[in-house]
Length: 495
Image 1: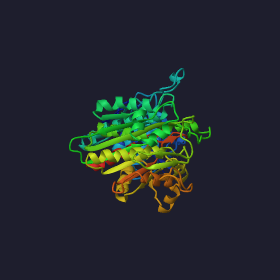
Image 2 (image 1 turned 90 degrees about the horizontal axis):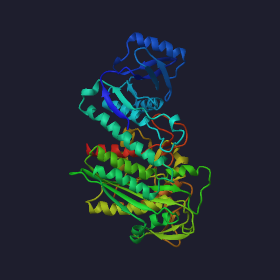
Image 3 (image 1 turned 120 degrees about the vertical axis):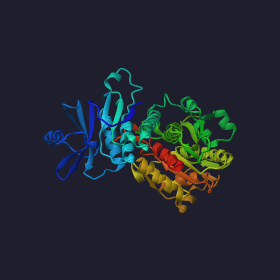
Image 4 (image 1 turned 180 degrees about the horizontal axis):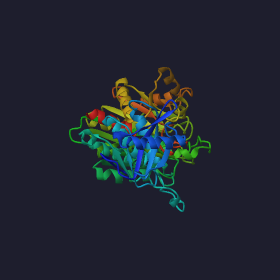
């Protein structure tokens, strides 16, 4: 884990500064005037000679006599103050560019603890690499930046003292989520996912329950069982509970955990199927979030649910037109075995509400899923969707997401699309109208939620797995999206 600390003086190793533009001119942005006017003038001359760019995600490195290396990270247009997400991304881009280095001091401009937190968090998030499965080539790939110091005058601020610790927690648990997503399905099955997370949860004092395939079948979890029955790797339901004394609120997080999705008997095309190892990103996010909330000792009770299955074609796989009985008794005609995520989520949503009711009621339930390709068509690869039965709850979440620096956009649940899920032989079909498929999937899930319980459905299909170039603090592969927003939601609820 990359260490993070706040410091009042710059060490003589590597210095990270911001670079911005004003018209055709460039300017150096640094905190607490760490450079003398003469040093700034000298560096500007060198930067201009190199035609350095101040664009976001741009990196320029210069050797320096006072510091071993000065790295400039682009902040875009000059401003009196920079948005905290701009600072977060700039710090992350710098940390990525410093892979293999032992330490660096980040002297980016800030005037508030929110901006300071963004710098520390972005740098820590950017310091990520995934080399677990490299063999003979491992020596050719650099480890992540070893330690991060953030230069600030706010070291004595009471709220600032916890910033470094929080940045480490967020980065560490995000790294766990990214690692899970990046792990190939040959090494991450429903059983191994649950077992690995139990080992992480126990030292945190979390209660752990794991239902195996026999228990799932016997207790009526038809969705999870139906999706997983075609695989040699049987399904699991992982339930983690964080129950602090005098909890102010109680939430349930439910994450889709398809450890690999071939589409089942509705087999996907080969092109792009390798990315389907990321179809458990929702489960990874909710598990990582409960770990972070427990690490930070927030006074918010959380139940995290990860319905885990591998969707494979075989002689025992669910067939198109099969009817399954979900947990709670609702029957579903499975018209498309590749619309499997909503089936495992339906089971877990019903069970999560049962458990929440016994514990005194839920203030909200949130499911997180790489659910539909339609999400990517509608919102692209960097913006996730939010659907809800409670606009107030959605509003709270969107505030949390904005503070966390994650892009979410509210989407409707049009009533006219609900009829497309009707089945002539069962209570409901698992697919409906193709146009607006993301919204139809949300309407399907809504059927498993008590209308009186505030509920959010987060479709993270595009943002969960980055198949393009790294940017800001976001690496190639698993991103860890949704974890930070869930943690901030809990932080705001506890304040």
